[in-house]
Length: 234
Image (cartoon, rainbow, N blue to C red; front, side):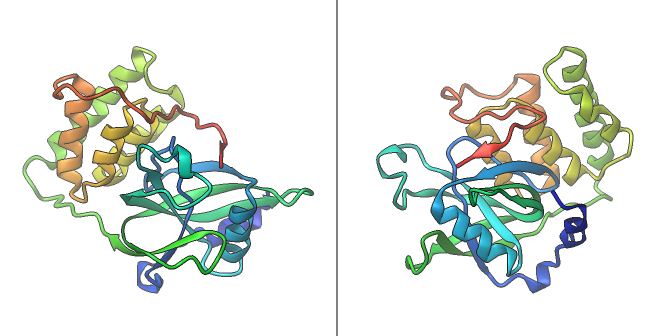
C-alpha cells in the first residue's frame, strides 16, 4: 500500500460523470463514510481496476439480487441502490491481482446498465445526497439514541469496541447511522433498506427500530458483515 494514495481521498460530486464501473457482489452492503478492504482477482475486475486508476478512481458496489448464482460470470441483476466508492490505497500484486481500500463517498441509484463494451459492467447512476435537517426537533434526540443503543451493543459484545472512540467525536447523524449500519451484523435486507434511505432522520429511526428489536418479522438475512471487515473477494 502506498500512503501517498490518500491524496486521492477527496471526492467532488460536481465532477461525477454519471457513469459508474460496477463491482457487484452478493455478500456485502457497502455504505458511505466507511472504508472496505477488497481483493480483486477476476480478470474482468482487474481491467476495471486498471481503468479506475487512470480515471476517477470510482467504483460502485451494488448487491446482486437473489438467484445470481447461475449467471455470476455474466450480468445477473443487481439491486438499484449502491454505494459509490473511491480507491484510496491500492497495491498491484505480482500476479496481476489487487489489494485495495475503497472509501464509500456517496449513495447512488443505478438507473440503466450500459451495453457490454468492456469486460466489466458499467451503468448510468445518479448520486443521492444526504437529506438532513440539523434544526429538526428530533435531530439531537435521535443522535443520542443511536449512540446509546450502539454503546449497549458494544457492552453486550454485539458491536466492535474499536468503533467506540468514533462516538466520542460527535459525528453528524448521517455519518453515524452509516457507520453503525455497516459495522453491525444486521440482515442484508435491513442494510439495503438503510442504504436506500436518503433522509438521515428516517435512516436513524429505521436503524433504531432494527437495533431495538421492534422491527416486523423479516425473512432470514442473506447478507451480513462483521467489523473489522475481512478483505472481500470477487
